[in-house]
Length: 483
Ligand code: SF4
Image (cartoon, rainbow, N blue to C red; front, top):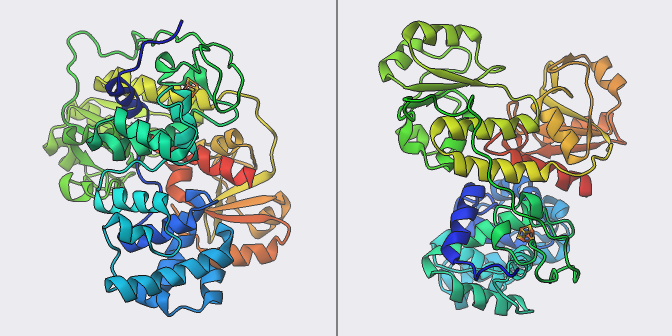
């Protein structure tokens, strides 16, 4: 049976619930940084670009410095993004053109932007939308594939698909839709193995329902019957008469970020001082001390109707004190990626958002299906002096396993001597940018000691922030394994 012509609003409601974190994945502070990062992202992952740009922008912070750069200096900084000879020439040309034609500023005019070295129409659209808020819907490889599978376009060029999408969706939704479709293509609607069973828009997709051939693979996919959305179990649901919490204090940084992604910022009454994302909550939500030692008096004064904690991070004494105050609390326990699926559902049920939580949980669960390979032996360091790692029985260990690496280490969070490090003989060493600030100096030193190993500097929040960034963490590890 052919699905009814989908309503664009229906699509977006589902995509919004499944990918509340959908946004430009390239780190940037201004239009100049965005245009540079977008040029670097050609044939390269956004995660890799984000690891490259901090050093590049520290050395060449604006058009003038880039215009005067030596090509070999730029090449040395962007080598890992691929095609670095061309990209370096384009970046220097970009700096020179910005200086000569636009007083060093990035223009907000589509034609002027498109005429800059290294900036095609697609790059121009990305910059216009994300730096200047100009509605645009650049069609990349993910959007091209997803739009055709969903029956939103039958066209066979990105330009025509863009025109179809722009006709179907209101102009004010283009920027958001652009990010949602890219996230959907990356996380669910994979080019070779789309996860139709876990897809949040399966009921609207003629390809997933098996009514048309997959326009991307050229074959009919096995039809999937949409499963009824499970309702929260009796244990998870709010007890009869219990009200949905309106004054929440979160002591877990990634949970705080998740609540904001779910549109619950207005219900946040407090946060631990490590809850720093998104950045603006530092100014709008009061801090109540640290993770191990929150200010209990301050918490009591804020009169929350729920405090959210995590068992590994927050001591039991905090829960005991809250009990004494009569303040309700919820302690999550996250040791695996699968625990995140359960925690999403639990939070959704407790916070009165079961549908948004279920869409996100189902999409994440879908990404965990399939056979796991036993990949290279990987050590995720989390501290130096002394060395500490995140072992196989931790969330990070499981994320590595799910992503195709084999986590190694003796304990959950062992302290490792120099001899332990040698004895573990890792094939891959991950150096996250937090909680310890590993940097290129650590990377170079370890590379000398382990010349055969891959030493990778990785985004610490993507690797360690469960729930709000689990999907990003999976992307990071899988991307690393595929390179
Ligand atoms: S149902 Fe399958 S083909 Fe359709 S959008 Fe979802 S993952 Fe892609």
